[in-house]
Image 1 (cartoon, rainbow, N blue to C red):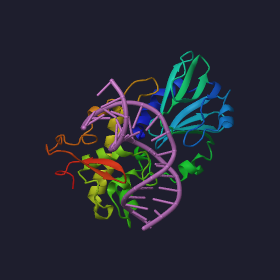
Image 2 (cartoon, chains in turn brown, yellow, purple):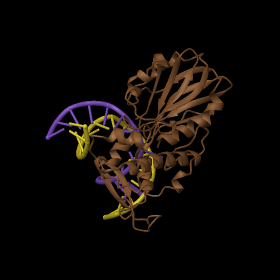
Image 3 (cartoon, protein in one colour):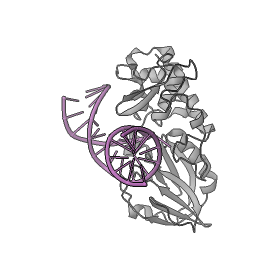
Image 4 (cartoon, rainbow, N blue to C red):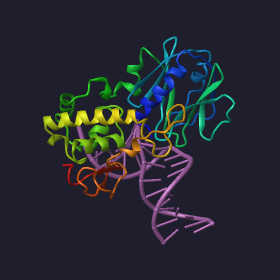
Amino acid sequence: MPELPEIEVLRRSLESRLAGRTIAAVEVHSPRLREPLDRKRLSNLAGRRISALGRRGKYLLIELEHAETLVIHLGMSGRLTLADAAAPREAHEHLTLRLDGGEKLRLRDPRRFGAAFVASTARLARDRHFRDLGLEPLSGELDGERLAVLAAGRRGPVKSFLMDGRLVAGVGNIYATEALFRARIHPARSVARIGRDRWQELASSVIVVLEQAIVEGGTTINDFTDGTGLAGEFQMVLAAYGREGEACPRCRAPIRRLVQAGRSSFYCPRCQR
DNA sequence: CGGTGGACCTGCTGGC
DNA sequence: TGCCAGCAGGTCCACC
């Protein structure tokens, strides 16, 4: 579900609704996420006020007064939504934040690949989740020059390069696929065989694709919604992802699928080289 | 260094 | 109709 655009859509949808509100109570229903929920640390958030919402890569940052941040990662199947305080608990609702004013923020995650933890805001960048995170794509620090530098001396397929969070943060399978399509680069091309001009093309493609996806409210394939339950529409615009056998929107050749590192890639064999 | 395969999980789909 | 294989937006690790 959630790559950078989905988390950014979520952040924007929740920011005005959460900023300034106080967490009245915290319920940990099942701590058994891949990274187990720390019941004690999370419960200590009761009484704290939310000051702002941030994002780093695919991590949502719920910043609290008094120098702590509640960090949420949605894994593959996580959802974070506001609901009426009286709404019954849903299946796979692992964590519930009850807010003043009668609403609750609930984290659901059927596959339990997600995470939710409290960290010191000042030390966030040194936290193990963030320490090795790469370029933040929409911050202005991603360009062809930076990608070329990161790729220097490396080998391996450009798709793996794009999806390596230690190099570029927030780009997952869907948007790596779409950015490569836009830049007309074959997903299996070695990063050692990409020139300056094509790095620039790729950097701007990543940025354009992510920004478009945010404008469209993210990609909803099965279940993504923003914090208010609104689905995205970028799935209507996907050029290659999930479109094996369909005509390439540029040249009409049939889109192909290949598997790289266990993940599906989709590409046009004619216009991606 | 890189690449693969598996692990962690549940749920949905499509083919038989 | 029911069952089963395959697949899914993410990370992390061991191993070659």
